[in-house]
Amino acid sequence: MVVRRIIHVDMDAFYASVEQRDDPSLRGKPLAVGGRPEGRGVVAAASYEARAFGVYSAMPMSKAIRLCPALVIVRPDFARYKAASNAVFSIFREVTPLVEPLSLDEAYLDVTDNAWGETFATPIAKRLKERIRADTGLTASAGVAPNKFLAKIASGWKKPDGLTVISPDRVEPFLQQLPVDALWGVGPVTAEKLRARGIERLVDVRAADLQLLRDTVGSLADWLRQLAHGVDDRAVTPNREAKSSGSENTYPEDLTDVATIRTEIADMAAHAISWLERRQMLARTVTIKVRYADFSTITRSHSALPTRDQAELTARAVGLLDKTEAGARPVRLLGVSVHNFRGDHDVDETPHRLPFGD
Image: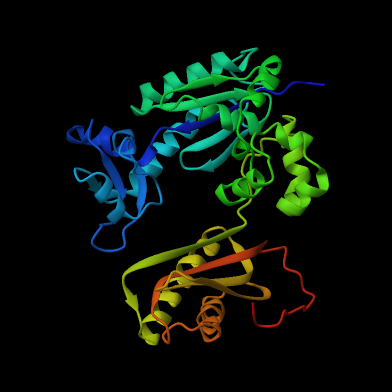
């Protein structure tokens, strides 16, 4: 069996690092990229100086300011982040066509066969980090391992600017030291459930009764058992097909006017339709997301024949509001997304319209 050589590269505090690179006055300062604290801003990225105060991504900016009163807040500039990302991914593709993007700032590379003529992945990871620094002025952390699961854990092991290598003979010793929440798909809630049943470490999953595991995590049980043995056969897949596209917005003040809410939904639907047009794609399903002022969140969906007709998709998105309490209850966040894609020439002519509803 061929042992694959997988590298996971993760840029360090990407948005914040781009800001500090481009504005020398921000270097060395606690920095957060995101919205204003007096509104409902959220931290999109935090520099390592800010993380020392406990500031992290997805945190309300108001809390971030309380933790770090000297925090410098910068509005995001996604055009610059995308440009930096393109430069990094160009370097990746010099090595191998097997590059699987996970986001603007991280990717898997399968370098088992590579254009640099290297037998081992570690020299490639080192060269990638050097090239990224030289070409973009940014740093990246990398993990090298026989599979994607281990490579991703390894890349986060020694951040920032780290390189961790898990060779095949080091897999078992590495697994022995990991907590259960290192497993793919185990977040804080699932980890708490597992620990309540005495499953504290990754290797505890191996010894756990399979039925107990299934009762605790459902269909995830068999996958976790496999990962606990260090087995992950997923291939690095370049140009992954998008499963959905859309946008959402959190408002500085709650929306209570139904006409305003409908206008916002229509605007977001137009954004999603523009995405479909650029890719010559059709969508069967449109979904809206509504988060009320009390933070309770609902989604409503409608599926029909594939289309990207703006009038039809917009009407369907706006119509879904009738199945919510938007307007009767103050709305904090709205979102619209499209799903279940088809290409222009792949339309199923068989009418199988689904009922309007959830």
